[in-house]
Length: 363
Image (tube, rainbow, N blue to C red; front, side, top):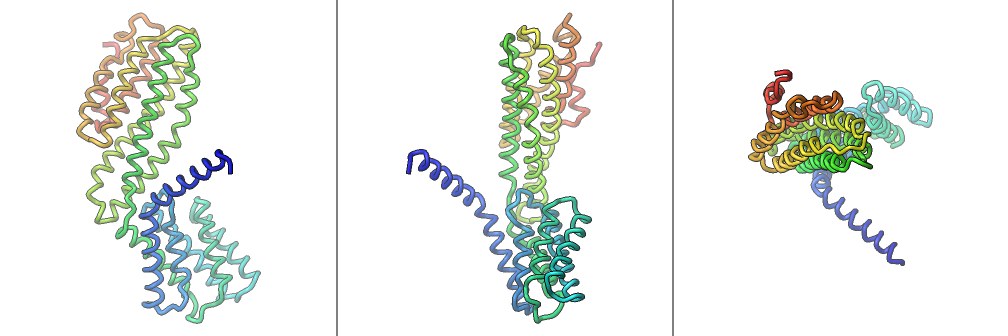
């Protein structure tokens, strides 16, 4: 085996080990949920082969990023719907290839009607096909539907009793978004100082790729809030998660504003002249955003972030900052105003409080 292939195998093994370690708690939750669902159906309800109790539980919880109770409930409803429709068809027409096809078709159509998520339909149809293929149970009609209900209820219960704490993941993704924002602004500072042969267009391309990071953060944060709301063990973390939700709302808008500012800068930098005034202003913004990243772990830093942003905000008047500047340079200042305002809301200020920090135009 060559050195390159050995290195690749080691990297693959390391990546797999990290992935398995990160999934340790979800694995505990899944195993516990399957055992509970199976035991209730087998020993309480007396069903001899509660296959769907286990499969519905696994399908409802899964390893997905979005572990909100609502998503778990929706998935449980979807798979139970597939089981019920298949049992109705078995009861009416018996078992066979045609009945299998009919069960899958009806389930897919119904699932697509009830939910726009493609995965919802596939999970429901999988359970429907499973019921149509397996031997008919001797315990009577709708036994597997009852098992599915047990599996769904167990999945929801275990979401509260053995919760997955998505707070750490949401916090890591918050830091990733803020760090990316800071890096983009720092890149703008470099290009504004350079002037000739600047690559502001490249920075704009990078700014345009940030939305998936925001979306991933939102998914993890919504999941963390949903679980903490349901679970008595995580409810104490709700204030922290709600502060992070304010941070997300402000950063989402600020990232959009940054794209607009960067696009405008690509226009004014076509003349190849350095813009040290804009570079100095954005350099101060980098410092404030770096402090904002620290505030994710330490909320006591937020007042300092706010103070730094206000010191930037009070200068955002075209006449004061760039007297005698061109209209296009003044337009960049005007577009920086909502960016700084949205960053201020990310620190916990209301929109009106953040707006009040900006100088009155024409005054």
